[in-house]
Image 1: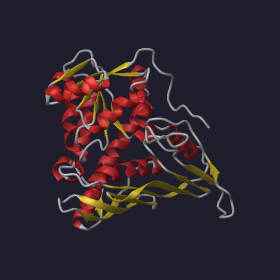
Image 2: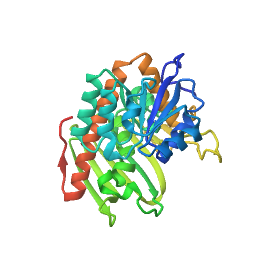
Image 3: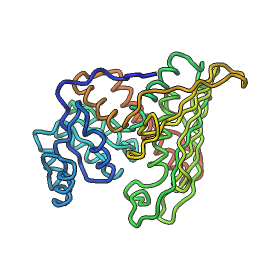
Amino acid sequence: MTRHPFPSTPTAPLRLGVLGCANIARKFCHDVAASPAVQVVAVASRQADKAADFANTWGIGRWHASYEALLADPEVDAIYLPLPNSLHAEWAVRAAQAGKHVLCEKPLALNLSEAQAMHHAAREHGVILLEAYPYAFQPQHQHLLALLAEGAIGQVRSVQACFGFMLPPAPGNIRLQPDLGGGALLDAGSYVLSLIREVMGQAPVRVQADASWAPSGVDISLMATLHYADGRRAQLSCAMDAANHRRATVVGSAGILETEFLNHTAAVPDAVTGFLPSQMRLRRGTANSLAFEDLTDECGSGFRFAAEALARWVVAPDAVALARHAQASLDNAATLEALGRSARFGQAVALQAS
């Protein structure tokens, strides 16, 4: 089944500037290069030679030796923001103040107050701020949400979701640095939480988390239970010390959805890109004897799907969809903050209203 979750591609490409030259920015530029909807026109780094090399490698027309210069570039419509987690709030706000739309890497912010400030700046300056979970813009994920909305499994009762990987030893890895927003929860757990939030349709009212800690002080793995006002529960697991796994089970009153939620997908394993098929299957009904249906959808780079979604909404804003994304981001920020506190202090934590 092929599903197109967004309108057709706009005629003029959205001109993107990339704020930083991290490895993820290289992957982003590679994946959006063929898109008719977006064009990377500039890149910035605090090191001029690094920006110049990045621009030369990816055929980008201009480079800047400071982030400020990129924000001042009149030929840039929007910013892709792949900086460390601790810098998201500052530079998303500054980009909004410069009149640039923002596609911000996950997690949007380190806490609720940062996320609120970012969305306030976006509203004040009339730009779009979009949290970039690539899997969430995959046609497969849109299909999952459509199945839930049409009642394919009845009322959602619970979700169990996990994401983990083995972090390779690397001195200075930002995932291990507390001051840069490292740790399994913010890196992998934010993906898991974002899926849970979309499936459950609301934020929990309290959370209980337990973590294991790396010598640097970040959480290396974490598990949590999320409690909702209507009595439902969800379970979250994330890790940076385990074999790669990424899957969710959504249990309803009349069926089950099981899904991977990969950022980048292919119909068959692709040795060049590393993209893999993303499995999703549906059981309609409550009996264990009922067979699962294997579901398939359009495949591709989640980076490209996300960037093209931003481009379409810049041309034709969908107020309902954008408000839904914004509220989910605020809920996620509040929940991540509560989960971190719960793991650190070993007790249940109630959420702040977002």
